[in-house]
Picture (cartoon, rainbow, N blue to C red):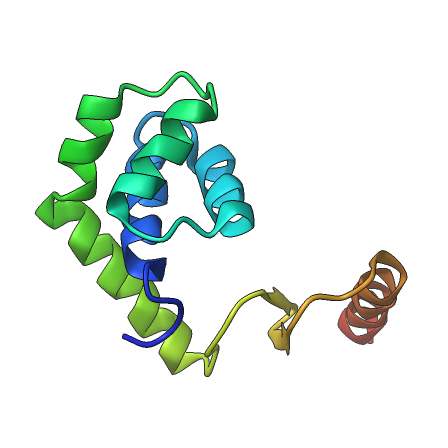
Length: 117
């Protein structure tokens, strides 16, 4: 699947956390911490104090439902030619890589002008 060695495992845990209303908390924390393997992912989530049911999270992360959701998201990204993170889509235009706030604001303003035409 490419990408960081544990990105798919981390993604499964973030998607599983969504079932407990904590997707962004887990996704952001794992993106920042870059845990080396599944055990490290679980430890980081435990240390995060996000209040997740860890056993349910583990079960959900290994479920067919989460696997299918992840594969669907990967397919959508490839179809849009998104091949890495971070990426952002504004009004149908995909920007790869991180952007400083002022640059991102300019891109949004440009998209608003294009949309108003």
